[in-house]
Image (cartoon, each protein chain N blue to C red):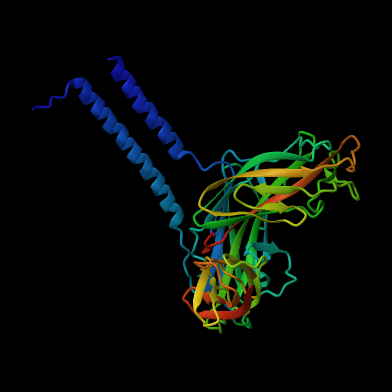
Length: 193
Length: 275
């Protein structure tokens, strides 16, 4: 049996091959890029040494965006908001979360005119809690490890704030604020259970 | 002809989509390279290393502060940076410095941070540890309403081993607790052990359940821990699941902490009374 390629099918085949090459090329681009990142070892010069030639250890963190207009409704047991965070590293990593010293984990009265927490101002009675999907629930009055992992992970975070009728309303111009810090670090050689 | 055109366009757009996603940057956020600094150094040696911080083009401009901090570990192995440790630690903070300590990054920019220092000539044996923290200042509410400002910090861990010094790898199991409820089918055990040496190591905790005739009935080996620093403690949960329900009697639970090469660092026993 003889196979005959009609001009139309041959164009189609060539087109497919061309695009296949394009795909392979794009893989090469990615591969070349990652090689560049790995190939920057430090060197010893004279009496100096470069500590940690392990510059391939990288970490990327994309924390949640700041949350504005967080509704605090004392008629509901808790007010919640969900955000995502992305973490990526070549090995294992951990993310800790902590609140600023001024609030101690409790949303506190903030003067939007002076851009400062009101000294001796009001605070919500319940500390804020952050819960990470497949991670921990962290009471921000204590802080702690929010999530551990390895490689790239998109983590769903839930911010939980309890409000009661015992909490104070604030004068105009003031609002409840809290500043959080997400800290990423590599935990090399850690086997995640 | 129409089918042919559709096919070509299908392949073309599939490839375009693939290439778009393949070349897409990781996303907005902060990236740091060189975040594990580890090496040996002799007393008096000058050390230097670089950390690179970069942001994505779609990220907002950011101001950074860089600090050399003490490194302490929590009971589950969390690495915590503190201004000055109240716990006993072997710190490298006193002889390390960073430059610059403050900088501004426009979207898509990167900044190299030089970490350098001289190991003191009279430094004692063991390891020396620190965390380099590069952190942003929190963004403030501009839209009004109750808000959460977010800042982020990328920590670089520094582990320096004093070369030629006496390195002591030792441990002590301070607690081997038979958890409630007592069970003849699955008995949970909590172990706490401390690094009593002067150098970090990875450890592998294990518990073995033995009967009165010293026969092994069950065991549980925990995953290898991350590096535990000198003076740090680690809490480990383990579980014994014998093949069949334990008969009434006295059993022993033997806790062991090993190095990854199998060297036993510490042991401790506790009684399990099944009634």
